[in-house]
Length: 262
Image 1: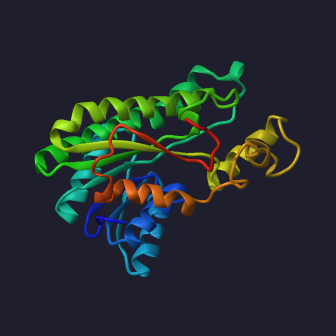
Image 2: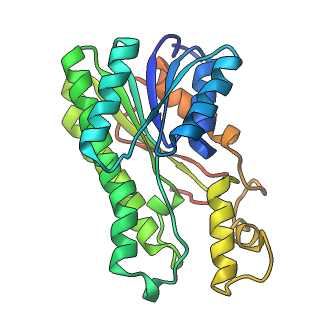
């Protein structure tokens, strides 16, 4: 792959575990200096230590992506430690299994606060830092198959991921003049702790009868015939951070094994 992320300073939110941890680990293996930013600081520190033990460069910083002051502090601490910010991954997100007619105002607001507003804040604050630096930059947001199709058990989650796509497109247009690209990637079914949570919720609501039935049933339409793991996503995410993707902006690159064809 042409270009490099060697010595680039990259923040990955929600990277203590799951997809975010996979993104950060792959970036570090390719020479990036990564910030493991997560609400769970202890878990973030463990992930950063694992990367460092493998020869990578990583630090951990606690963050609530829905709080603008805390996100500003995250970026400030990153710049203080590494000297600049080159790439921002707005990856932190939450989900919930809930039938359409049962989604409450609080359910909707809780998911939109993290998945929607959190991406807006992260994109804005990273862009402000990059504009000051005058060297451009890359902002990469985590969308989903749920950002392209609505699913009846995840209506509020889908709304939040549609919002991620919209914010990405708007930001790409707004920030191009500053040589800042903004793109997102769309995972499908990824076997992480998040799906363990959703699997429990399916059973608690009486929607499934046994463990892993939910993920197996939901995955029947994957053309490649299996659910993904974070490593399957990392090729796309690292490409978006590489110089090789400099001419890509405003796009959602699907990495879902062929669940959604657009």
